[in-house]
Image (cartoon, rainbow, N blue to C red):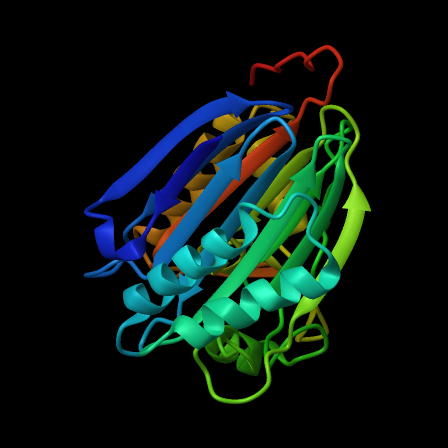
Length: 282
């Protein structure tokens, strides 16, 4: 079993890497964007399953890095030895992370992929789970849970886009969203904290948000790459460039308002038991 723990409390600048294990190729990065890194991630993979997660400590609140780190360890320890987690066990992983936090709040998204391609995912907050099929089509598998979204006026969406109704460590009920599905050979799982989505173009119509997923912009950045190292490099490189200077660019059907933030990305390519997919160069 290969386990990687990327805790916000331990990130000095950035940590990145990649490896292949069992049925999957995996790449990852966690990068500090504030004085301390509020984002965390973990990966645990063997021949039977891979468990992936990114967690985004809520910026502007004290101990964001503590919250994401504590929750990450608790969720990893709960899930890594469960052979095939059920929906109830995914929910319990979030409850376990939530109950271990002493101070601070964090969002989280976790995906467990089996060697047969079946996956189960859970999310609290607005960290993103994208899938990418062999034709390069990107799907936002679990919509972000935010106070604002599609249909919101642009004037309120931008300043409120980081407000979430539920987070680990936050008093109240956890709004845990669950998604199940199956990956085909060569398909991609891409997990990212909100630094990615918040630095993508938002589609607008009549001064209201029509699509906040950033999928079209993200697709232009990835441009057909199907290797996790390439995908993480392209996405992180463009997001870091955009975060370097806060800018606002508005077109007739989109708006981009960049913001600096910590960043965590984990990318998995499902290779299955068959021949590994050909890596594209772009």
